[in-house]
Image (cartoon, rainbow, N blue to C red; front, side, top):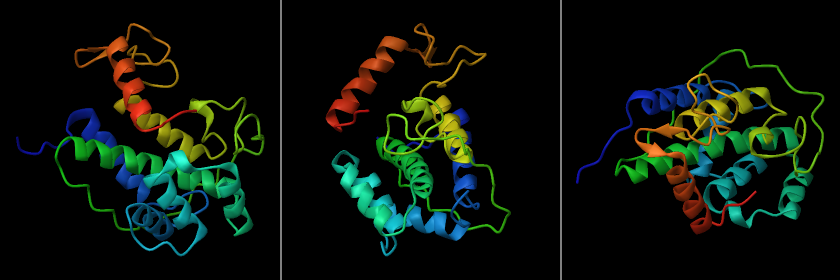
Length: 203
């Protein structure tokens, strides 16, 4: 069977993610963001951010609190780590999707010169996670200290899976009867649970 390419909503969110990746982030320039993504895929890892990116992309199950503390000691702040985590988690999601479709990963975008977002959440605190969150830490809030990354995560999550928060179309995690493209919610959760188990993914 030949390779397939994402289309429709999935193709659209992939395009949006690549546009985000090539723009300045809250803590990193556009060039640095693209370099972080390149490091995740196997490129040069000379900075703490790039080292973090490679680990998150290739072996996240091995990440431990002392590893993160070492990155902090080397100059990577927790706020910066949240941005790296957001970049790499979404990159990995799309690269894995394309692998499953039998397609090559999309080349990284060029860096664009734009004004960076400046929004941060000063009310984020350590509240059950290793990084600051707004409110109690759980999957939908893990990137909440950096609004641009949090919004990007919700955008991708809503298309590749279900919206973390209530959605007008019913495609949200709180709707136990949600269905997408003929797949029921129990079927989605079975696939998600099995995939998580095989990849030693837990929260």
